[in-house]
Image 1: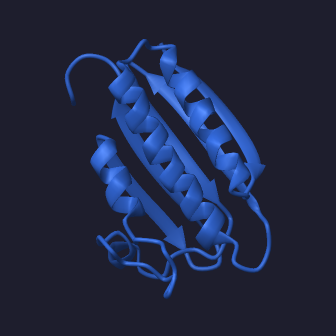
Image 2: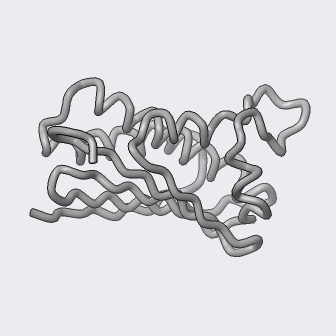
Image 3: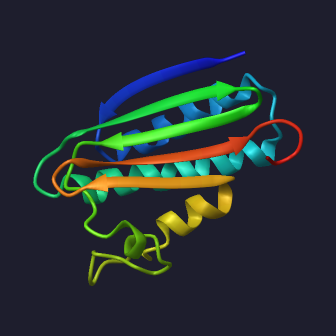
Length: 142
């Protein structure tokens, strides 16, 4: 049966751990493996970090995380109302980064894609970004 949770939090790095724990706790209701929980936490970290670092370069905005569990599949939406991404396809390439001279690797979307079963990114310049990730919590991959 379907269950969902929606939380909004300030787009600051301190809330990355909070988002990870919320996603893990929500997913735990379906009794997934430790490995699956770890994958979810890693992907959520990357998505929230992207929002914190890139969405609001000149102000502190909010991030909204929606968790939806249905028939053993967890869908996570991480949404911001920030700067947006001009070229999502380009941004999703490994090592692509807009933070020159930064220690960031440009691997955020690649990590999300690796640890989750599906990843969709929609964005509008000046209108924010939504990352949708799915993970099968029980049984076989779909």
